[in-house]
Image 1 (spheres, rainbow, N blue to C red):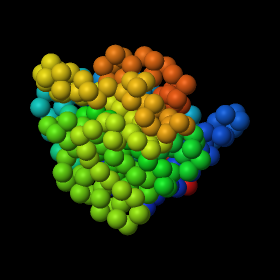
Image 2: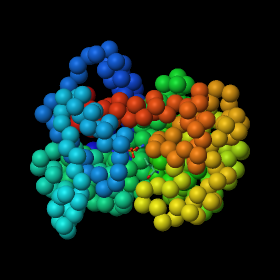
Image 3: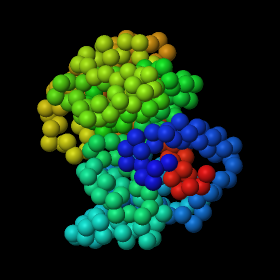
Image 4: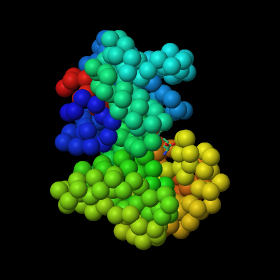
Length: 307
Ligand code: CP
Ligand code: NVA
């Protein structure tokens, strides 16, 4: 496994193994087994943006693995008073064994990783949300029993979550289609990377404008917020343009009969997804949220060399 997990592609070769380990660790946790391979290991969690799932699941993950996590708000660090990322990185490397960084700018995550001597995990930035994609594919594997050959339809904003999902789907050989307005397509370079991977694994990656076309034959219907953190000034325009991309019962009915519905959460009920769908029988969002914990435990164990 590469030292850092900044893009889903950093785990390209190990993706399936991490998903398998997540399932294994989940079972062992459910069985009440104590498994503490990260005793005396410390994880710094540097969060520039709000978080419920990522923050809590990483902290609990470290605790369950026998280690410790520290939540760091940049505003309370000297980073907030002008100490550079490079200097912060070198100092933190002397104290902790890994760093999770949730940042506004992807370049800042890359900069931190450049200067640390310990693994850096991207806890979401403006380009990717790789930990989410890891937990999502684990959740699909649990519910469908397989990944290769399935079809995932992502409906909404071509954002960080869509980018990581495209790359992850391509890695495991799952078809992925993104339905979005022209102005909010996923980044062309990421689509290209996903297509390159897909050509090796035999899957298809496509981006199209019509949500109904996208969900036809889909095993998974996935959506995320229309206004990501940092995009708040575009709220009015986005809420208008994305209206036809709402994941409601009518749209879900066009997918496969046994399709599951996913959302990385937090959800804006009544906007990108209706209550009826989020709380409906096809929704697996609470399993998906739980699986952040198990997937990140697997990631930490791999990155910190405990297996
Ligand atoms: N899905 C996700 O990353 O949620 P948080 O913003 O609550 O961490
Ligand atoms: N795309 C969303 C995901 C939140 C978990 C954001 O970046 O705000």
